[in-house]
Length: 263
Image (cartoon, rainbow, N blue to C red; front, side, top):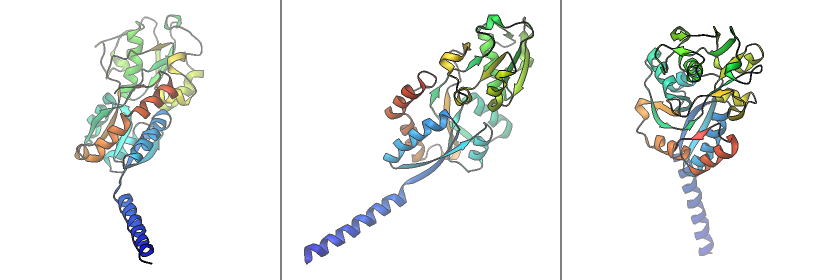
């Protein structure tokens, strides 16, 4: 009887130990935009779970709310933006948010259902770009890189339509919310679309864009957290899970050059 009693005690101890371990596991909420960023973070979540970090993925449909939610402590981190956008938001709000790691690079493209080359654009063509400063600048910089327009300060990440110094084709710019840009393809001559929204709309930036920005630039995506949290252990765990081989392999297989690992 004693061995049987010993087994029950050992089993009870084992159950308590597992429960205690589960209870002590760190749990964090990470905000992403729906689409590719959410897909990637789901892989990160699975890697992190095996390493003792529980990630709750919270999806958003725009670029403003994820930073607001992070600042207001409705999230512990977010992963959806590049650093110029974060800096622009901080400049407007004074939110205490910081970059803690890079994630993926995603050269943005411009698309047209009417023309195959930028040189085919007619005089007075309508061009849709994002209405937020950093992503609007990306659209303008693509055109400037390919010689369609000239900007006053060359490669400024805060360039706006007002900074166009030369516009020989007299392009007419329409500024829209980034999420609405794919829908405008039917109505305008050229659209600059962020890759997460392009992929959601069934476009392949590596194949369907008639021009793309170069990989050399500040537009690498990042993980952001509140400044007060940047040195907490879960931040390191989150970064290590993201910068893992399973995530890199997923990017290569799923996105085929549209999203590129930066680690």
